Image 1 (cartoon, helix red, strand yellow):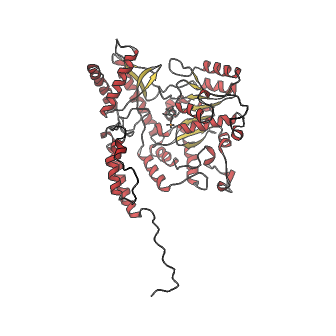
Image 2 (image 1 turned 90 degrees about the horizontal axis):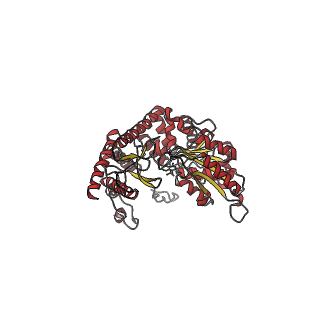
Image 3 (image 1 turned 30 degrees about the vertical axis):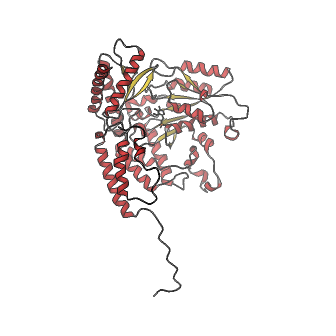
Length: 491
Ligand code: PLP
């Protein structure tokens, strides 16, 4: 019998995937992931698809009704995976090779489940405090002095953007309140070597300095910024009424992995009262190797430094760290607290939203923490050291082979080289190397990328994947030499 006073039962809410269904599919997904990681080297490293191939296999509109996970995962395997270039592949040598190592993947999985947004301390106490503690571990491992405070950003481009914005704020021009247009402001300048990564130019574009706001300083024979030329450029700009803001020194440039003379650049910055930002997005990881710590000499004097654990610390992308000796300036540049984000603990805690343009803050420190703990300082150093050994070994093979040349020093795990047979003009040599690279990459057996060194096309082989062994590097070298023979035969 029903009581007439009983409320009408509410309809069940549409809700999430039921827990048991989640458990079943999660196990299957983890099994797939473990198999994938165990056999990553069996896929073509560079996706063997043409532009539009993947899109052509995807429906133009979303389904009106939900679909079973088994069907979705089938399409993941059949449509998505064949369209992947595999960055976790041991034969991936392009750009800067990276690894999403097991412990970091586990961290990402947990982070996705927790779905935390640590914009405020209270909205994510553990993520906030874990981020600060883990980055202090990293600071120590890199040999940076106490006082450098770190935050995690998604990419180095954003870390650098924040650093340059802080430099602009530190110059006391009132840009935060008044903006940059319609007022009497001098032209502002940032200085960096001609080898600097494009993210520095992009920061200038975004912050209203324009492309001409980044002045490129010439480099020496080893692609390092010339500090005398930097000094002269600053003097010249000052005399012309331009306001210098900051200098970006690189520790590991993208093209050749050169290391700017940071101590001399720090002297110049001190003399002129300029912000020193060090772009160690790639090279900074090498400081985890005790005998390579010198690569950061002078960086202890920087106002800010970026290093990307997602580049060479085996943490799944994305995880960039911005260290700064002046977090108060970054905070002053970016903190803005509307009523709906006010909390009573306010100034007594770290609210991560205060340290950059983004409000939302993904729980990225978990994957870094798990990676550092799983490998330990010695394990990290051993892995980075091995990559350097493999790259230097490859460079030796190239140097020893007639007709081939290494085009830049190898301070880290990147080798820049080309095949330069006698009798070819510069342009012919460029075209020849382009053909060689295209042919190698088309095999799907190795993946290399290229750059220009003093205007000439150069191939880049970067070692950075934990599955890469000497056998893989040797296979790339064999493939390159076979390809050269074939390309010449058919040219
Ligand atoms: N700085 C250097 C030296 C780099 O090599 C790169 C990318 O390769 C970046 C900055 C930009 O990194 P991200 O992709 O994290 O923005």
